[in-house]
Length: 363
Image (tube, rainbow, N blue to C red; front, side, top):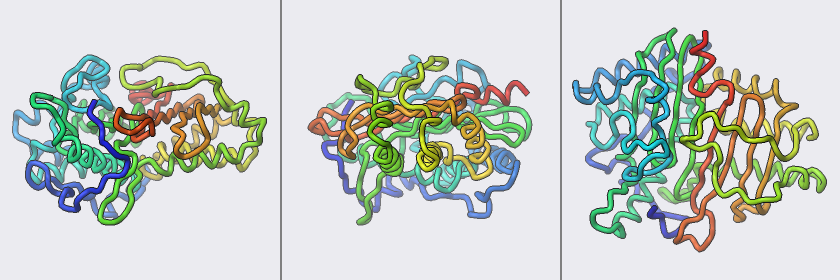
């Protein structure tokens, strides 16, 4: 697919609101609404979902609110508009930002904000803005007739099921390099499976450098640096992993655990590993993230950390964290224009026991 020609891209401040009219991207929810209140996230999400649906006309609502079925929930991808998804679908569920007016856009993003932590919402928006940078650099080079599109306008939201405080329903929000599948019910929120990526991996906005997944890489490198030589040897795979194994379209696939077990790590190293896991889990609000992290800690002795590639920031290494309730993969990618250097990132976060809120549905 087309790729940005350099890793660092300057994004004009005007792009924050300029796509198919005034495209709103700031967080629309007041801080008080985003605060962590036990069992409150579902109620806030239900209210935000109903408000969003209320802004749509009949045709838009019919495309946005779908039945919660196994087939519908699998329709997600990290690929851009114009490229068939891994499951074979050609169009994402729901409506996209670029076809909505300002009020509808604010309502859509208020819903996304309602189910994420402030830092999680910011990470999602940083990914969207990275894709807008990619659209601005790639559009002039795109051959006539090419259907591939990047940018803010190409991010979709769909609601699967009926927003409810007790019965499971889902919010899907995503586009290129972002696919959030959020299942809610009875005060619980599940973020798996979700793809969180970025292209470009770093860009500049109003004089500041933005790395949507910078902390993930920095913390992983710090963990590797903390390992003793024998620990590093145990953790390092003897083969290259080019991309995420459990990507979109790979529901139910199982990976054999490899690397070093967390039980073989020191207490400080285990703390580093948990802090790394929290970069994904922490996209949920504090209360829900704490519940998910408790599950991870409970299975920590049976959690594995694996590494493939150099231990330098520029090396493009793959890593994986795999435990009873968590699988995280981080896989940097190089485009044809990057000179072999990783200029965008793929990651996947799954819970083998609870993808798509399987435990919520079983209640």
